[in-house]
Length: 474
Ligand code: NAD
Image 1 (tube, rainbow, N blue to C red):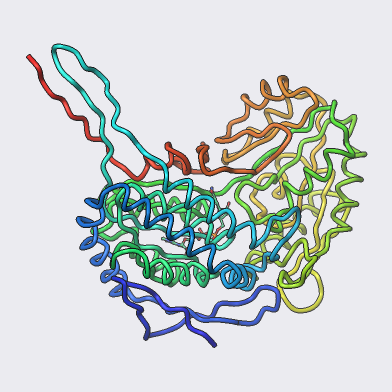
Image 2: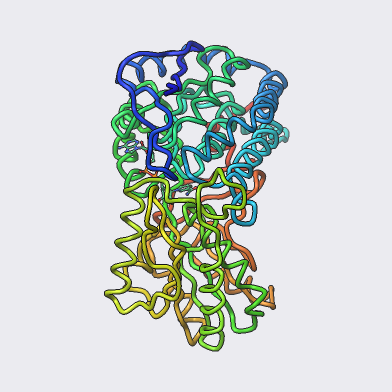
């Protein structure tokens, strides 16, 4: 079985213990990575520190050229990387509405090129006879990037490219559940970047903790669960590291009574079930007006029953398995809790027989806030549909949650929907859509969904420190 190596200081690092990487469609291992030791973390941080002076002093134009070359390398290796993503995450090559490994690669390439071209020009605050005052942006030093398993390569790109663009060096630790495509990307990148600028260590939470507590790390960018984000914040406090935390979501959608049910149902279904519900900004709680409730539930249950579930390597598969057994258990437990709470399962409801970590696409009616399936992030193919009578109640219920990543309002009157959307406590609100992100618009959570944003100039600024330059004239 192939072992995908770590890369430290431009060198392939082999040896030591290994971890098996399981294909969730079969439940069988298909590759291995190294299980790093704390010494590997020390070596990677030392290499990144040593590379920082040279990389941060490299002219912008040269850094941009190298980052565009990374985008070209992703493109040139697209078939291999897509297959690795499908095997390690279970997500289909194409997937429901085209949301699959191909989109993950396409997104990674687009984010790389758009971010490579971003600039943070100095800002002039004052320029008069007394003084000229400028605000400059400087890189921070060594960035530790820790990623989850749901969009492993795309999220690694979301971290690494702006960090490098701003002049930082990086140590990347992918999820132990899906480290393969990311490790391969770092190997490809090291043919382009100077040694030590981008390093990868593989392993579990202990290796993540060794990195986030390391004295040689200046900034942490983390995407993953809220629980781990809190641990990282504690661990980072001793050296007051800068943090960007992109954490869990439990996004609400509110459907107003004026929608066309047949037209809106497939869009709602796609928003909730793409990547098998395993996206931070999937639609996870759907509030529907009583006048449309039964009709929309019926449509959603029909779509759930028709979705093609299977091995993502087979063309035509729309939804794959859960990425790992523990996540399958979370979804099964929430389905059981929903039934016990009086929820009515309109489609699906159980684990699929046979190999792999498959759960049937599931629609649950008859619940409201207070039921675990509504209050907790399910991160899987099971959607609670909640009835409301008054839109103010729907807004209150949507906001009655510690998460605040995204939210959406669905209506044939966009202006009214915007007014309601602005009342939602979330970092992004979509009108007549849900979950789409783009490389030039900021994205992040409020409340316990995170701190800071990614993407665009706002996201790039998170990888810098401000330096104010005051030139006295009198
Ligand atoms: P997770 O928190 O279990 O793991 C994420 C990463 O943290 C892994 O690399 C893991 O090894 C590492 N880790 C674990 N313990 C650690 C510790 N003590 N110190 C440092 N690192 C540690 O998350 P997951 O299950 O891989 O991902 C799913 C979660 O990620 C969901 O909650 C989802 O909503 C969230 N997510 C959020 C966004 C966003 O942009 N807000 C995007 C994708 C996923």
